[in-house]
Image (tube, rainbow, N blue to C red; front, side, top):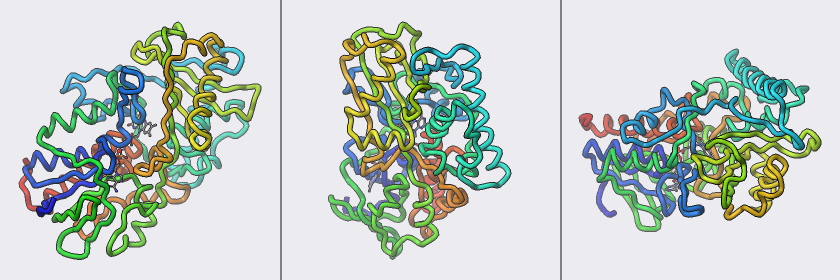
Length: 425
Ligand SMILES: Cc1cc2nc3c(=O)[nH]c(=O)nc-3n(C[C@H](O)[C@H](O)[C@H](O)COP(=O)(O)OP(=O)(O)OC[C@H]3O[C@@H](n4cnc5c(N)ncnc54)[C@H](O)[C@@H]3O)c2cc1C
């Protein structure tokens, strides 16, 4: 890696891969440096744990009709389920299933909370979501859970203004063979020659001179410019040093957009224990125990005898801190309440995520802290046109998503091509 590159992309998640592939297609001399031993970052389809694919990170093609990765899935013949209405799910109340009236009441409460947060943000109010949602609804724990799933943050740490600018078409389509696998396939098919150097963390970016000088354990890499496509937490936690230091307004922005917690706990069974259609959804809220947080599940995803539970916010972070077995217990207890204790004996495998403690990631997805939504736009600036930023947090209206990350990678690559004086290819 002693050569001079035109561009170096740091991080091989959805954003970095899109940037690298675009630059490779344009024929520039590009290197992609990835700290982990695999590509994809938060787009990670795990086939090792259960012998069938399940996504540890992103799984749903959000805003599918305007999602470029959905279009690429079509182009490459990668299957997804063209349904994903949030409302198409059952709700278990701790000792029984909700009836239709209760289910309607649940979704009215969730919709009302979402609308209240969006309305406040649309009006230009940048306050904590907790200040504008109805705290008297009996479904408060579920409304807070759903806000946390959307933002990875508890309502006290969720900016109404940031929430409001997210562009949601409400089409959330799950990818059959995994969204992580889709992101990897898109990179490979659109630029087969793109090489990613794995296990190669960039520890320092020197942007003093004409280009950039990057330090890695494998040596120094020089380039005319760099695209930094790592999570905000990596920068905010100073895992990469800058020389000179990051300007204060940028450092503030990286700190204002932390990655919250969203985690998964997955179970495999020796046969169908739910008796529901493939890829069914259910939510749980224990009405008898107000201290118990909700968890929601995908059941029998794509016909596999599995349940994948989703946790978010402080509850998710606390369970990760408590350890994998605590997360598994939390999940299985909710499943047992809903489907009976017989399923315990049918469990053949379990897996848990810990994004929040992964030093290369540091959480699930970015969410502006209350009062700080305006900071997201700051990530669109560059360091003297030598360091460009990409990644989900950079996206103005599709932040927190894989397609948002992908689009920021493409945008950074286009800008890099312009700066390098390359004709579009
Ligand atoms: C549990 C969970 C569920 C999700 N569900 C969905 C969903 O259904 N739909 C959706 O659209 N999105 C979802 N997301 C969010 C989505 O996965 C992310 O927004 C997206 O994948 C982020 O891509 P990225 O390229 O910005 O960052 P990342 O994927 O985080 O990639 C950054 C890369 O940088 C690398 N890196 C870090 N430090 C260094 C360094 N010093 N040097 C070199 N490399 C470094 C990391 O290892 C990583 O590979 C989910 C995320 C989680 C955690």
